[in-house]
Length: 579
Image (cartoon, rainbow, N blue to C red; front, side, top):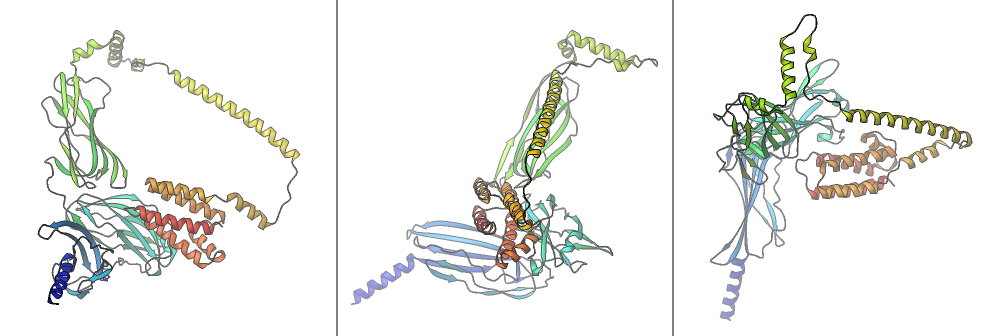
């Protein structure tokens, strides 16, 4: 009996040591000032290969804080002493308190092997707090601006997308909001994406309608906690003009990793560098020529420091003329920037024009990329070599032009008789014009033939009897009716191929087609129509769908799962409406 008891105790001890779960929640300190950030650390440790985390961390009520950043990391090791698999998951949350005093932080829950584990609640104290409002206070109590930034944790010089919305209980106030001024500050660079207003969403914060006014990119150029100032606008009415300001948002800007090349300056994104000779003439010693350095790609393109032409005794260089051709992209500003240099070779012969070394940081792969130097090899000729290479006709033309330029009489302006180099008759232009005339003549003949046939048909066809207004409306609706299954299949292909911009454009066309079937112009009118003829539940589902589409459309990071769920909702709802 004693041996059996010892065996049972040893078995229980081995089970306990084999599978063990440790869950903890801690704050970096217990008291915070007005500008401090509350850092919470959640640690889950699983000792045993048979333990499986079945749910994510269920956070406590954090409504008394603003979440300004979060991140997590998972480590897995094997204990050599016990040969046990140890999995540790660490999550960090940065919070900004909304009020002062003692704030209670509740328990974090997680389910492992069908068992729920939780942490112990604790209190933190916030002192000397300056209260902030989520919607900025303004001179008008009827209109509010709110700035939203979903991704608040980025690298230095990496963009994050901000969305500006206006809220009001009176939809007529939306057309009065004008003169939007984006934030300006030394530690951020702001570039607009678009200022086109979205459709009005009737359901917003505090039962107020909302509308997207602007979407823009914010590039923080320093590490640490960076505060984005509010966006201002004016509300114009017949009697007065009020100024409104949105809320401020704090970003957690991560410092770039160590190990950057010496030539790295501030380029963050993905870029290419090329150098070429833009001059059409041959390179000649002591004569200027145009050398262009082109930097293309996507990232902080308008704000980064461009590579320059390296100094050399073989040539002289002058300050460049910068030409920018950029537009908003998915991960930054994309396009190209051209630096046009004037370079004068100091000697004849082979000359190598080199750029400075250039490197950038790729935030997607989290690594530095060194592109090195780019070289342009030129063969500069002397003036005598250029003259010898010219033909007799070119020499005569040059001599004639010089004579006409220097000798000019008041009776006859001889400079107008200058011989143009390599002027010739363009036969292609003549053939194109003849083709256009023939095409217009054929179109005219076809039009006259069609007009004669139409006259004959009009004389022989008897007029159809007119039906009732309802029958006519039904016929028109049948003509306007679109096979929405084609749209569904096309949207499925766009989602699978990752063409998200085209996905939402096609979705707007589908919604417009459905509304045209019922002779409704806007989404608000269509919702009223659905509530009257299809029921209030379907109208409510349509309103929620439009709001969900706007959220997914302006989301900086689009997931395949979210679009899959959105497409299912679209197919279900529009199929019911189109019946």
